[in-house]
Each structure stands twice: as structure tokens, then as C-alpha cells.
Image (cartoon, rainbow, N blue to C red; front, side, top):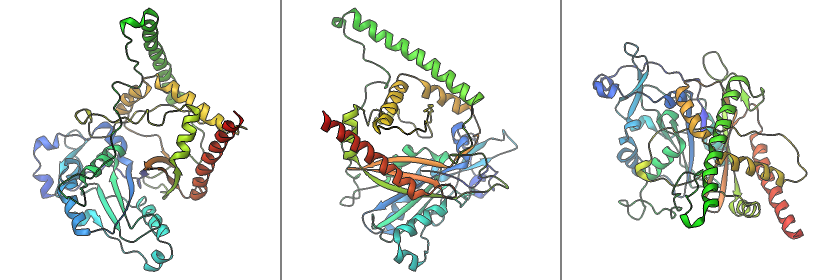
Length: 406
């Protein structure tokens, strides 16, 4: 999950023998525009383990796999004598700097291990990362909680890659416990989509002129929706602004500004309940989650944006929220707005402010984890989690009531 860093600024990192020996070719590898956009962000991930941590094995795995990746053994250096832009420069990785085993209060751990983990992970959102070494670290919390035998907190600067890229790399670094030379068993892959989500397959000649005309018309609609969405996006950026609420803070981080700690909390939802609502409302849970071919996947931050209006209203029928969301998402699927905003985002080199709340959904087996990165100065984080679970319960009950009436 993303966490706002404590006003991290791009500075000239101290020159070391490692960076002095970097050749000109390495110095010419600039940080991407999107990576520069992510200068004030880092990613915090908590991983629950089924067994206690074997630290020597863990360390050997990190050294053999993760630490070999170019981005994980490089630092960002800004050479003001050249172009003044940050570049990736190779550096030596000292695992003692990147694998942290904190000493927590034994009494606090014994009293409430879950709270001890939550408090420690929240503290990571206020600690700046050392820019003189590669921007990642692992924090080993080797004691049992209600959900795991041990916990590992991973913190990585967002310029290293987006969440999906980092998770993919972490999975690639793991090995089977039964056979360390083999990758762990994974669930069967979903059938890959043969084309973009907005593309309709060209009908065969036997389908007739009407089917072919409908296929052509879908691309006319796609073009119209794209133009309308891009214009609306540009107008929103230039002329409109969200009101100043708890969800949007104008001042965060940087010199002389208050840094608010973010607390990372999560709740578990039943995937069966979500599927129950999905089937009744004729939604699709996985249309936006497609497996790509390895040769087409590029490392880094690939971000696109779409405008989704968030209406604050109280409907008598809880399913009205689902109908409205489905209608909006179906409309957005017939648009190239995300591709255009990705290009725009690559050209923009500063953010207008940070968000106080970030929501992530991760699916594990038959459950969904709702994960919140919450500004604890503004939100009652656990009450907000209860609102998520309560909303799903109301929607599920409404679907069940509709089925009984049919």
C-alpha cells in the first residue's frame, strides 16, 4: 500500500567509491518521469507468514534474488553539473542496512501482538529513507499474531516500481519449502484476454452486414467516449477542484509542514458474499485483472487515471450504489481515457497534494482483505473498516431479499 513519505526531497546523494566508479553509461540512465512523480511516496507492505522467520535462509534468499535486481542495488543521484535530473547509479548493497529486526517492548507484544504490529508499521510512515543507499528495507517481526506466525513489513520507494511490479518480484524471489530449487506452487492462471478490454472481436462474414456495422459503431462510440473523457479530465484538472475535506489535504510533508502518521489497518470480507452480489447484479470481478505475457510486461510505474465521481447520498435501496457503480464502470470500459492520462501523467512532474486515505483490495483464497492507509489524525480507522464490512452486509442482505421476492 502507498504511504506518504515524510517530505522526501530529491537531493544530491553523497558520492562514495561505488558511485565514483560508476561509468558514464550507468549515469545516463535517468529516473523515469513517473518515478520522479513518485519522489514523495513509498510503498509499505505487510506479509503474514505461516512459520517463524528463518533469518539466515531469508537473508540468503534476499541476497541471491532481490538484491541482484538493478533497481534494488542502485541509488538516485542528481548531478547538478550536468542536466540536474536524477539518475540511477549502482551502489553496494549491505544487507545489514536493509534487513531490520526491531526490538519491541515485550510487554506490549504479550498484551496485544496485533496492535504491536500495527503500531510499528504505522511508525514506518514517519521515518524518512536514507537516500545514500538503495531505497528498500525489510522489517522482521518474528512473533505470532492472530493471523500469522510472523510478520514481515516491506518498505520500498515508489520509484522502484508500482505495487504490482514489486509484488511480482517478491513472488519471483520465493522458493518452495520442499524443494528450494523450485518456485512455489501457484494457483492456475486465468485465461488471458486476447485483446484490449474495449475491443470487440470482428464478426465473421457470415454474421451479416448488421453485425459488421455494429462492430464498426462500437469504435465510433469508443472514439466519442475517449474525446469526451479526455476533455472532461482536462477541464477538471484546469478549472475544477475537489473541496477541502478530510480526504484531501493541501499541506503535507516538506520543510516546515506537519507530517501526519498513517495507520495501516485491514479487515476480512467473504469472497462468497462478493460473488453472490456479483452474480445477482451481473457484474464482473476480474475484467480489469488480466494476466499479461511476460515478454510484454515492463518493469516500473505504469499509471493511468480515470475520473470516477464519488457521490455522497443515502439511498433507500442499498443496491442502488452497486447499479450506479456498474453503470459508470461499464461506460469507462468503452474509453481510452486511462491511456491518454498515462501519457499526460508522464509529462507532469509534480503533484498538487496527497490524499489522506488510500484503499486497497487484495484477494486471498476465499476472502478479500480490505486494507486502509489512514491518517490517524483525521479518521477513526477501525470504525472506517466497520463501515466497509457493514456496507457489504447491507448489500448482500438486499440481494437476498430481492431473490426471496422473485
